[in-house]
Image 1 (cartoon, rainbow, N blue to C red):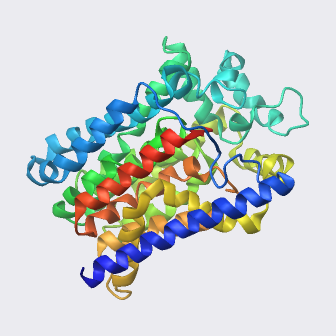
Image 2 (image 1 turned 135 degrees about the vertical axis):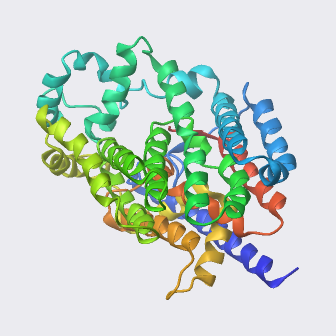
Length: 433
C-alpha cells in the first residue's frame, strides 16, 4: 500500500471517528436536555431501518456507476458526458428518494407544516405578499410564516408559487422540480472544473459528482435546487473570465447569483467561490456580472421587499426558535460531521490531498476552487447561523468539494465507499428532509 493511499485512509478514518463522536456526544446531550432538537444527532433524522421501491434501483445505479462510470467518463465525448452525468445523477437521486416511497420520499417533502407549499395560497397577489413579507417573519407576529418560509428570502417560496401558477402545483411537481434542477449541479461543476483547470480532472471528477452521498438530501429538500442555481452562476462566471462569450456569460452569472441570494440568505457566501473564480481569470467581465446581479435586487426592492430588513428579522426569528436553544459548542464541530455525510470518505480524502499539496505562492486553479468552497463552508459554520440541518443547508458548498475525489487513486474502491454511505443513510435512517 503506497504512502498517499495510506494517508487518504487515515483521513477517511478520522472523518468516521468525527461522525461517531458527534453521534455519541449528541445522543447524550439530546437524552439529557433535548437541546440539540434533532432525533439522531448530528443529522435531523430518526432511526428507522427500511427498504422501499427505490432500493433495487439504487443498488443497480450504484453498481453500474462503479463498474462503468470511470471508463465512460474517460472516453465519452465531452457534451455526451455532460448529459450522461446529469442522467446518472438523476437516476441516483430519484432512486434514493423513492426508497421512502413516492409520498414520503417525494410528494410530501415540501408540504409539511414548515415548508414552502403550505403558504402558496397566501401569494395570490404577489406584489402585496412581498410588501408584507417582513411583517410575518417573527414568531410573535400575526400569521407568522412557517420556519422555512421565514428563514429564506421570498425567491424560494415564489419558485413554488410560480410552478403552481403554470399548473404544476402540489408536492409531486415540487419534488420533481427540485430533483430535476438540483441534479444539474453536477453538470455545472464539471463545466467549471474543465474551464478553470483541465478536462482530464473534470472527467475523473464526474463519477464522484454522480454518486454524491449528498444526493440523499437533494431528493428531499429545496436546497439541492438552490445548489444548482448557485453552481450554474459559478460555472457561467468561469466561462466568462476565461473568455467564452464574456459579456453574455458574465451577465447571466450575475443574474443567477442575484437569484441565489434571494433563494437563501446564507448563499451570499458563494461570493467566496466566485471571488476565487475571478482570481483565476480576467477581471474585464466584472461590469457585466455586476449589471446582471443588480437586476434581481432592483426587481424585488421595487416590489416592496427589503432584503436587509428581512435578514435582520430572520436573525431574531432564528434565536426565537431552535437556533436559540441549540448549543454552539456542539454544532460548531457537529456540523462538520454532517459535512462528512455530504461529501463522503472520497471527498474527505481528496480534500486532504489538496491541503497537503497546495502551493501557497502559485496554487493550481483546481486547488483554489475547492479551497474557496471549503472556506465558505467554514465561515458558515463559525457564524453560528447554521446550527444543525447542515446536511441539506450546505449542499451548495459541498458540490464544490466532491471533485476533489478526482485526485484519488483506486477510484472504484472510493466510489463503492461513497455509494455505501448514501445507501446506509437512506435505508437505516428516516431523514427529516
